[in-house]
Amino acid sequence: MIKICGLKRVQDALYAARIGAHAIGLVLYPKSPRFVNYRQARQIVNALPAFVTPVVLMVDPSQTEVEKIIEEVRPALLQFHGDESPEFCSSFSVPYIKAVRVRPEVDLLQYARLHAGAKGLLLDAFVDGTQGGTGATFDWALIPNESPLPLILAGGLNSHNVTDAIRRVRPWAVDVSSGVESEKGIKDAAMIAAFIRGVKDADV
Image (cartoon, rainbow, N blue to C red; front, side):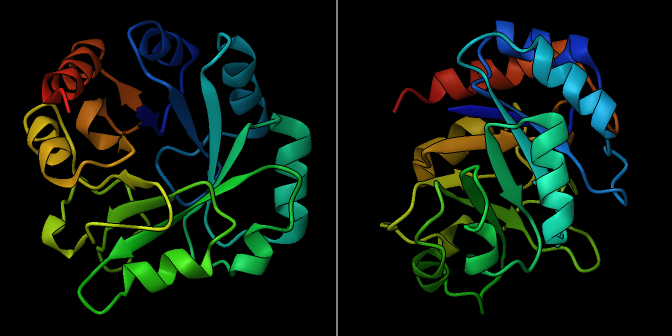
């Protein structure tokens, strides 16, 4: 499964969907260079074809903010990318995935058990002071062989390393943002196509 994240243009989302992306990620976090407002996000969501999942990414939002996003954007999946509690994440009418920035001191199995209500655990690189989209990878050896939740591998993936990443980690899905960009928030069609070919080449 493939998620292309941090889109800002309808044409990029439609192209990604057309050539094989299963999910489109929209960043509703104002401090991100990939931030989209309600109107932009809704335009992309409304344009997506059937069976392509719109996901909204948030970082430590308030209850009111999440409810407003659900009302205005109508995502199919929420992605919490901050320090949100399991109780908070599971308190909404829309299912969620939880991101964790991986480092040696984080027990991923315990983290997955805490978020037992999530649809998946997204593994991203830890870069101090940022919340994702950095283009940095992390040590895949830190990922447990078994997990109570489906694992979504993110963090510095691109067409050059995604085949090896899938063969080594065997995640449920992969998530890419900066690895398919010509500039932040602007996706490159050739890079998206190369990334999706890389996923298919893993053949696991």
